[in-house]
Length: 233
Image 1: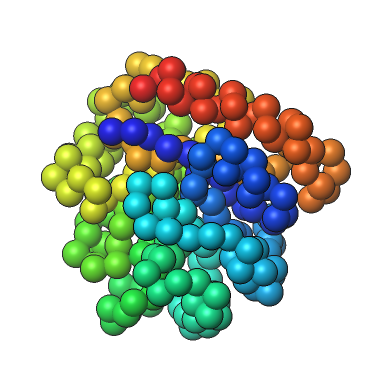
Image 2: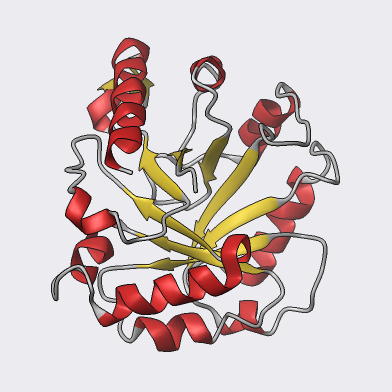
């Protein structure tokens, strides 16, 4: 299995040529109003209009970060973005657990990933509630929760549970792990974890000022992370 990178919190269109340069086809927009990477809907639509989409192994994959947003807000944003996206391109969203989502009727709207945070308790119970939902596609483990998974060593019960689900469902259940730019890829901690994507967010590590990306540094970090991912798996 080839683990790939997701660039999170894109707010500048000049990021996309760099992603194309390194064949990174996965990115996210952040629609959480309090986020430093918050993106307005009209900006996201303008970005998407300028991108080319295709099917196949190098197809772009779009993620939208909503946090704990209300279902009706999510529906309105997705409906708006659909006006500039080809109908065959799936929209993937990151959300906190929500009874509203569980009760949602199946629509051609989105696939969702449940975000596991540091304070997540009883991961098997939380994940199992979503497994039979037709739009559930997997989990995103934030960097704090990831550290918690290994407090009992590399064979923690939570890790074993997630690996069993992954082995049974294969690509129908995807695991995303959030990492930092200085992430320590300890092989003994990830070699038994079936990870589909590592994600990292545009933040002050690659900015020269608030929301001003230093593209030279960003380029260097992308190369470094790609090399680390390849070396660690």
